Length: 442
Image (cartoon, rainbow, N blue to C red; front, side, top):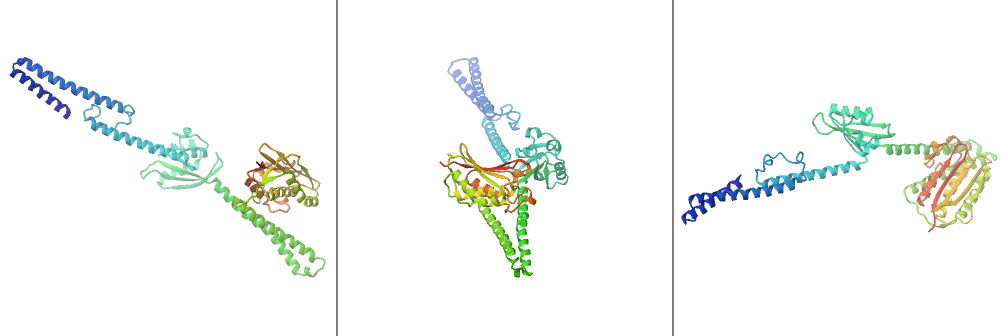
C-alpha cells in the first residue's frame, strides 16, 4: 500500500502543479487544467499497474517449480500480492531453500536405509507397515511395495514379531528377541523401540542377521569337540600302552618291542595332527609363501603316485595314471602341489576297499589344468558334499581309518592360494572324484 499511495500522491501533485502553471500563463482554461490533472493521475496509475504486472510475472516464473498445494507457506499477503514484492520473494526463497535442504536430507536417509545390512521396519500405532528397507524385505522374502500399508502380521508373517511390536507399544520400552525366519531360514536378532516419547507412537523394528555368527559359533564348537576327540584317542592309547609296560610287559622280550612300536606310532600320529594344525593355521591366516614356477602336470602326477605307491600296495589298492602327453605347463609351487595331490590320494586310500582302484589324472582347460583323483569307494551322500573341506569334518566317523581330518581343508587353502578352485563329485555306491584347477603358466 505504501508504494501505491506514494506514487498516486506524487502524480496528483505534479498534475496539479502543471495545471496551475498552465492557467497562470493562460495556456488553457480551468476545464483544461482539470483534464491535465486527471491525465497525470491516469499516467501514475498506468505506471503502477505495469510495475505490478512485472512483479506478478517474476513471481509466476519463480512459482512454476512449486506445488501451491504443498510448497507455499501460510503467508496471508500472498494471494492478493498486496505485500511488498521483495518481502514476498524473500519469504518464498527461504522457504524453497528449506524445502531443498529437507529433500536432500530425506534422500540421504533413503540412501542409508537402502545400503543398511540390517533390516529396518517402521510400524504405525495401528500396526501397519509405514516403511521397510531392502534388507528387511530380503530377510522376509517380500517386496517393499507389497509390504507398505499392510498389517505387520500380513506383511512379515511372523507372530513373534507381532508380539514384540505389541509389547513395545504396551510398555513404551525397548524389546529384544532372537528368532528364526521360516521364509529364509535365517536367524535374526530383533530390537523394537518406540519412535518418540508420545504414546501411542510408531515403533521401529531393527533386525540384525545373525546367521553367519551362529554358523561360526557352530564351527568353533565343532572344532573344539573334534580336536578333543582327535587328541583323546592317541592319548588314551599311549596311556594304556604305558601302563602295560609298567606292569611287567617291559621285561617281556616278546611283548616289549611290539608295545614300544605301538607307542611310537601313536606319538607319530599326534605329531602329524599338531603339524597339520599349525599348517592350517598359517594357511588360514594368509601367511603362505608360494614359490611359483612352470610345472609339468604329468611329472607332478608321476611323483605323487610314486610317493603313495607303498601305502597303496599295503592297502591292496591299484593306482592308475591318466596323464596324456602334451599337457601345458601350469604355474604352481612344486612342493605345495605335491602336498595337495598326496592329501587327496591319502583320502582316497582311506575309503577305497581292498581290491579297489584309484585313478590319478589331469586334462587341459582353456585357461588352466584340471587335476582329479577318482576312487571306487562307497561314494558320498549329497548332504555331506558342501562340508567335506571343513576342518575335522567326517562323513562317517565310525568308518574313518587314520588321518587327521585336516587334509582336505589344507588342500583347499593351498589350491585357492594358487588362484584355483577345488571340488568334489560323488554319488552313493559310485565312488568319488576330487578335482582342482590351476592356472596356466604365462
